[in-house]
Length: 323
Image (tube, rainbow, N blue to C red; front, side, top):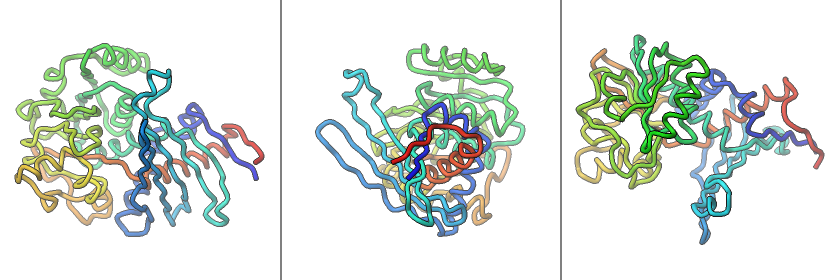
């Protein structure tokens, strides 16, 4: 049995952002049509951390894969990252393993690509100013995703200390992007597109600072008790999600207004898949606020991994081993 191994660099080379966005289009549409199989993720907890097992299958592209992600908070003391992950791709005809892909890079790219797709579908075409709140490990791909779908003239980046925002701005400037680090209010005020990618337990921006017509991607706040957007913003926006059940059970940005009896699942505008299929309307006016709340689904990993593998095989990327 031959198995292709793709490290983080291989994954990035095999999955440029436009390809990743195309993969997300396929994944969300397949899910909305009821074709994709994506069982609820299995969670295993130990004394030291949590491991998640996320399988999915997309019939149209024959993408069959499982991601394994571990979150172990004590790892930095050991000189290890908090999050580690792998994606295994299987042959849909035989079930034989075809490839192993480094999971952190794939996750960052596909998560960014989901925001890119949402931005393409919901942000005003004339959007030029992009505010990015949070400058951690996933922030770079969030920026590249928005830059892939809109002609952004200015990127404003805010982070808690400002140091990571400065480093990311410098990285983007080296790639020809007009980017600068700034305070969060200066970043958000007048921004056409806002992306938040933090683990904050409280809102990271003020509703009053959100300009009419802005589109917001809420990418962090991945537990019930985290929150990036003020409830007031959720209440006045048209909110789209990747999956309704996942959003109302896992996303603090949705759960907290529901807990306060201010909001319900019925108030959601729909999913990205429904939007792609024309089952729900998108932006209604230039003044409307739109929000995409990302939770993250196994179908995204399967679609992204399968597309990366095809390109890797064509380009001869990675290492092939005999098992």
